[in-house]
Length: 259
Image (tube, rainbow, N blue to C red; front, side, top):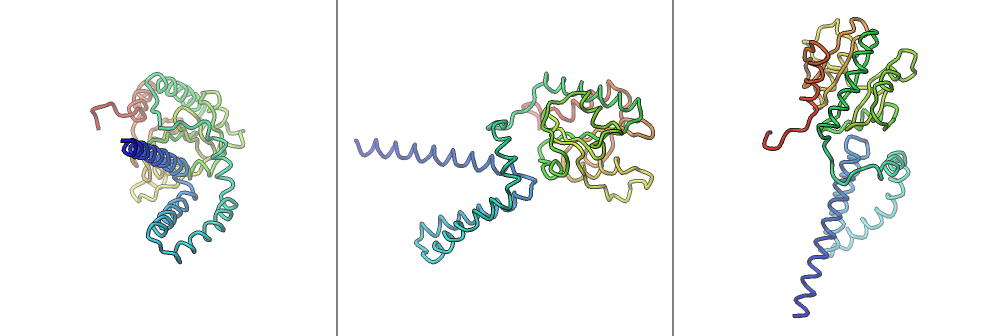
């Protein structure tokens, strides 16, 4: 009976250890997804698996090689990815264990700030490009800009896109209810059906939405028109109320029971 109880306890402990390690590994992959470190982490995962198998199957030569490989390359990896590690550790305390979707109140407040900023910029014919990250991570584009990681506000958005601002070029990436970065660079659309007169800002909006599930809001500095890009196309916006309704529909998480 004692041995049986001990075996059950060991199984429970091993299960908990595996679960905790899996959660940590999953969060690390999600955290670095879209960065240059992501592919390296995937490669390391395969090597770790090979190391464990060589140990379990008593493949001594392979086990010796992998053990010495890790002792050398862990230092190399730390040196190469010191910037990613530094920023990752700095933001670690701000990360939730699991992704938390914004509620209706948070989305409503976020859209209010966005609409206020976009339509004031539009009125002054000041161009802007604001990207909302959804399921597909946009880390590679965030890293191309100036990291902010600050709370969303209409005055801040307006100050970013003022032509006198040194960070007005490029676009802003919104992650959750925070501004992740500004002055970010995005891929231009190569769709031949896009008219040649379409400006760089609009081509960038289309290009990003062709390659991700992001929602992009932009205002034209030539006409002041406000547009929303999604899935590689522009959606017409008639007025500010329509803009708010459309944005809420696009960035709100799907309701339970709906795909």
